[in-house]
Amino acid sequence: MAKLFCASLLFIGGILLFLGHRWLNFTMFTSGFLFFWCVFFLLCAQGTTSNIIALEWGTLVGALAGGVLWLIGWHKFQRPFHSSLLIIVMAVIFVGMIITYFLRYAIAPKTTNLSAFVVFPVFFAVIIIAYSIVDIKKVHIFSCTLLGSYAFIVPFAFYFGSSLTYIVINVIGLMTVVNYSAAVGYPPFQVCDIILLCLWIILFTCGTAYQLYREKSSPPFHPPNLSSWRATKKFCNFVFDKLFACLPMNPDPGGVDIEDQPMWILRVHYSFRVLYQRVTCSRQDSLESGYESFQRVRTMSQSEDSILDCNDSKFNIIKARVCEWIERLQSWLRRDRERLVQRESEEYEEAQLLDDGVTCCTFRKSQVVLDDEYTDNSQH
Image (cartoon, rainbow, N blue to C red; front, side, top):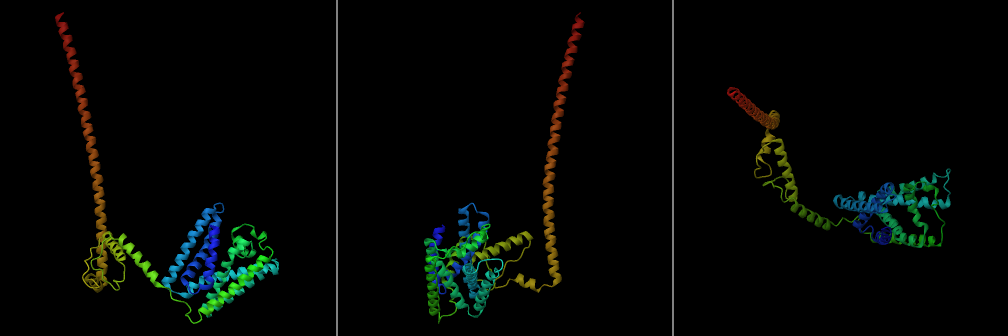
């Protein structure tokens, strides 16, 4: 899966490099995917160090869900600044990684000059974020071309063994590997690194110039194509209508914008209202024709005292219903107790009858013995 993800970066980077600002749907999904991939990788790497499969699948599922959610948010709210802020923040963090990586070759990281590894990235980050408020279109193009050009050369860097991949590996390693700072994370710059660095700069320059020229006369952000969103929404409403077709439907729902609401939402709302009425023992009149029912009009025209009386009556009804349930339970228990007592009395009577029968038989046997002795004595 790691090799497949690395190979896919070639196509993802190419699209971001030349079409990142025009294909906003792809850019929004990719930015959400990459951001949540980093987040879930850092979270899963803490607990699944010995299980690579769980790490890969957990990261992939979380990244896909994040990309889909960010794309849905772009279609739902249509806020260009907030939607493009994620990829701008990622570009700012990546600029800090680049500066920190190349400062290692110019300045040795010691305790006396560690402030340079914090000041320069923060300085460039503040510049990028401040300029995005002035002209977010150019900053968005810059972010797309910077991340796209680096993603385009990453497969070549892995294939040829370049050290440019350590720009990201060093940061992830410091967060996930214990004592990673003691390792050598900046190997020497070789010919392959110089060639790929020149290719990276050329791609970044060409991609930025191409997108700025292409988007020169276009609006800052193209509105999202809502046809696919509407088709998906229509399909989901159709599926939910079939799923909730067994629920009851209000014969006259009424209300403002009632025609724009899907049928399954009306069914669920009416079912919950009927369930609430049965639980609270409230018997409301059926809705009349029109947008408002007479029951609602009567309720609005009532005074506070009448509303309080109505609430008291509802409470009394609920209390009476609870008392009725308690009485039913007590009568059921009383009936079982009476049955038990009756059964015990029947068993006692049967035992008494058995004892009387045994006594009678004993008396008859003793009387027969006495009669036999009397006859014997009389004969003698």
